[in-house]
Image 1 (spheres, rainbow, N blue to C red):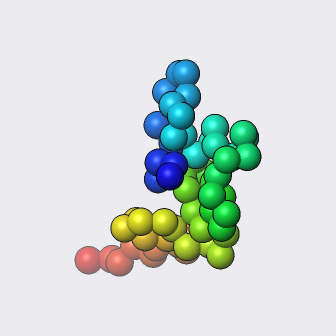
Image 2 (tube, one colour):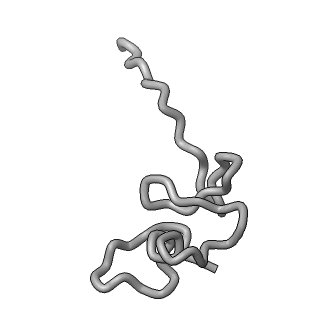
Image 3 (cartoon, rainbow, N blue to C red):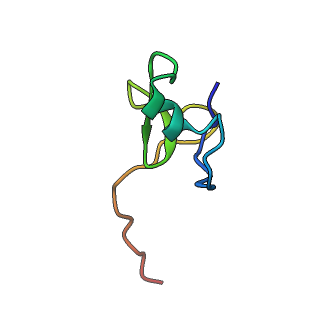
Length: 61
């Protein structure tokens, strides 16, 4: 199983999701987006939450 997030070390470790995707050894149903392991349906794998692209408005005090 690959790591949940790429640590960008040189040389890349054997469980690096980027390396596994390049070699074609990533498990079915998974892909890599922004150096993170995600399921093909868009959900983040593990306890992490999917980040939203909505900007938060500042509330005036």
